[in-house]
Length: 165
Image 1 (cartoon, rainbow, N blue to C red):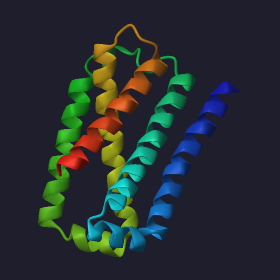
Image 2 (image 1 turned 180 degrees about the horizontal axis):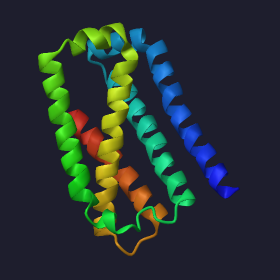
Image 3 (image 1 turned 120 degrees about the vertical axis):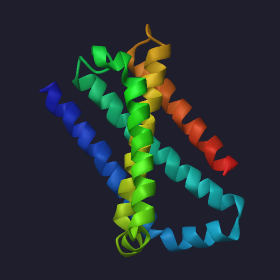
Image 4 (image 1 turned 90 degrees about the vertical axis):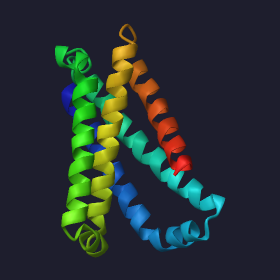
């Protein structure tokens, strides 16, 4: 019964990501005007979107840790920082290649859901990478503590990256 409960919570976290994408799309015109003006409020809107989407992804991790005993304890997690880093790097290279050699910009313009899917995919991979690094560093901590630390590290690193750009 608890397996179904945590799976339902994971589905709810995924539904939260979808609802966040619909909400962002609904307000995309006003967000675009705010971002184009270069104001601080535009940056706050983007940071809020990043915070909420990262929160949903890490909630997914928390619910999966409740559901699965092997989460963060399987021997593969000892090598996951290298594997997830390579997967993230490979995915970025494939994304760049696709955007150079195809009409990805036209596809995203016609179907904005592709943009949100790509964003969530990279956010998930980056969050997984940060979680695997935290797992490697904090071996003796509890699963939930590792996920909380990785959430904070993910948000802070993404905010710093956004400010540097």
